[in-house]
Amino acid sequence: MSATREPPLHIDTREQLVFVLCEAAELEHSLTCAYLFAAWSMRTRDGDGLGGGQLAAVRRWERTVTGVAVQEMAHLALVSNLLTAIGAAPHLARPNLPQRARYYPEDVQLSLEPFNADTLRHFVYLERPEGIEERDAPAFTSPRRAHPPADGPVGIVPRAERFATVGHLYRGIGHGFANLVAQRGEEAVFLGSPRAQATRVDFALPELEPVTDLASAQAVIDRIVEEGEGARGRWQDGHYGRFLAVERELAEQVAADPGFAPAWPVLANPFVRQPVDCDPVNVVSDPFTAAVAELANAAYAATLQVLARSFAHTNETDEELTVLATVGVDAMFRLLKPLGTLLTRLPAGAGHPGMTAGMSFELFRSLHLLPHRRAAWALLHERLSDLGAHAGRLAADAPHADASAVLGASAEGFAALAGKLADCLTAQTPYSSGPRL
Image (cartoon, rainbow, N blue to C red; front, side, top):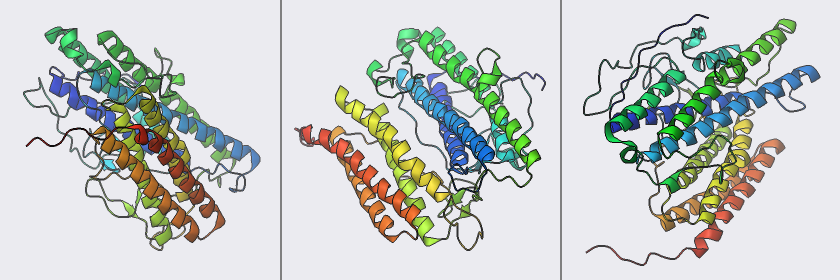
């Protein structure tokens, strides 16, 4: 490891600050998906073919990777707080994965990969502290330098800038907030509604702090950096150090047993079809697996729309905000994780013999903020109800009992979450005014 100097980011306008915050939100979101994909690929159940010591190690690694993913979810919520604090909207959209130097600097390679030594090496590289050099896994070497550089001050429109690490990006964001306050004054910069802030009142995440001024913005930025790099140089405690520890333990296990396989033979970047906004993917052709993959992606999109409504609400009551947060969080653990892990045990299809699938976290054009309160709740309720019915039909057609059980439980989960929304929807009054004529 050796120290390097990274150039400053140029964030001198509100538009540029919003642009870079949206980029940070996309990265947090994408990292969450990449980490969950790897975690869900692991063999963590009794009967998965691992001995006692190996199974205990894999379960420990799965908890570590999942724990980092949960913190990345919290970071995404904190970036939403930074955006809403300055009057912008939360940003939950992102390009589909894989992304090889298309949207981001060439060192930021994002891909859905199963848990293995190369994947861990890439995670270490992505989370490395600013000023520390690490090697990336060879498979993630950038094939091109497509990200445009930003030299000098930004003009009237925002533009992409180079950053070497996640910490480098956030330190630039912190300087951007300070620059904007120096130009316009704190009150003019932090003009967003304090009620729009996501806090631990509704989300059981200790990291969630509201942003209302420069001091709280800087505290949030410092927290994100420290949880990734490690607090005040204690990199062992951050995402970087935790991934390094897992990497060392995996190497020890492989040295002791070269045939050790901690993950299922999961296909990287498994999609039902090629998305238009990302690099080439592997296509899943097994009909039943493809149907489950579509259901998982639909559940993911619905979860994001629930969370978007929670982050960018209008006149919801306190009770309704709690319901939105509860439904969003419950969907992650009650729907997405079981479906995502099931996919890693289902065949990818004839084009990929011996390989299994995984959840692609695909996003579609239809994912957008639902702007009108009563209509938003009605659409969310309708979507969850429809997905529950579809899951029930898939459960009836499942080729084996394990898949049938997961899909049956998912059908019950969709229905239960739709029911929570229905209770509030019933109490909401219809629109009282007509169109402007």
